[in-house]
Length: 606
Image (cartoon, rainbow, N blue to C red; front, side):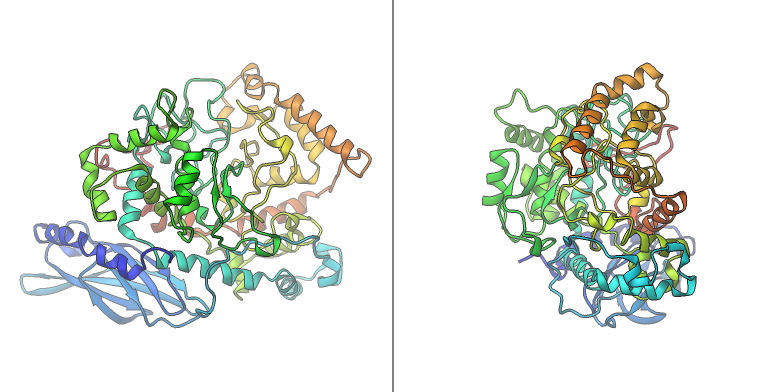
């Protein structure tokens, strides 16, 4: 029901290693100079772990690989993947592989890197819940820790206090739900579909002018699949291969009016896609079902896409929300292409699909079984690739699992504050840290859509906080460059808005630091007056008689919260990790020479 199982995927994968095997036979590099690399272990269940790795570069005469778990040999294969089916439940296993070759009658071996994973507790969880919840109200510190003074809690009592809050917020059960959800996705991954999706995601051939790819604004090596800019730069970049700071379309005000959300964990969302939720389930889950996979119809801004997703795609398909989402950046004039002049946006998408060169056909054949190319297949492949961006193994989750040493004292105090007096858990509850709903407070606005871009309706979706430490700048317009500044905003929204516009903080954002005061004012436009007036209206309509809500966080409290938020980052989501590197294609130009091989503004490869 949820796509091909990984066992079926393995049957498809048998086609690829034959070409790799042939290249080994003709290579001449000794195995001593190269080893299997980028070994990655992924949990499939309580007893199954999937392993994949890269073959030694250019090594001749490899006869196979030996697979080791916790230092003990458990199997061998001639392929570059293996599924361990006898792992122990709820246990952290370490894996490595050894490549074996023969050279002039001598057996020579070389060992890969080591990767460790923890298996599921059991397989009773169906993996249909992502860990999101909706609760009303927050816990009181005094009820769980015996005091309302955060700093009065002795260091040796922090863990006992945290355990009570973890139980209160049912975080252990929520984490088990999320881990089972991710394992379900990983069981149904199709490696060849992901590989095709990766190539398409990085292809500038999907843009109207062959100058922009999806990865131009969502690169794995930048902010967990973002671009590090406040307002993204899509088409007409002065240098089409520059990623992030230094990428410019030559205009003072970028043509894209929003911040690019990260790709990481996008498959965890079950209700909607995009900041404004313009792709969503037609009927949102009731509060009691928040975070649960639903088969409800999908609603999109286009009738053609809505019909396609609900009539041509199974309602049980785990990729369908991401498939629907993939249709819209392609037809956004500022992002990738302008469909005007075509009969419909869908007609433009099919034009783009049919424009792909014949060099793409072997890749589609490997993924789908035949050479047919259409946009729905493009959307499916890119959705499979995006769904592989699963990064949930962070220090806080390790702490919930009982590894108390994973958090520092400051991070523990930050967690206590987060779940009690700071009020953060009002909106960022559960292990998904979002209820997949829209909610305030009002954020500063800048850019081409700075006025009436959804804020008056409070329609921007609350982001997940997973990996938030590496996804700056923050907000739907990327207006805050640090977590500390975001926390200050929540401490005093009115004061923060007045400070942002009064002190011209736009000029201090990395993307706009090179602008003069007049140019910065152009980036803000009329948004300052609009947002400040809107804030005044919101205050007047509140039950506080117009008084601003001021939480008044101290510098120490802000530092505690920021420390805790950094503990939500999966180390494997950092640029340079094996997991991130595997999400970036070889710098070979792609099937047709239109691949986005990213560089920074200094010209260095990313």
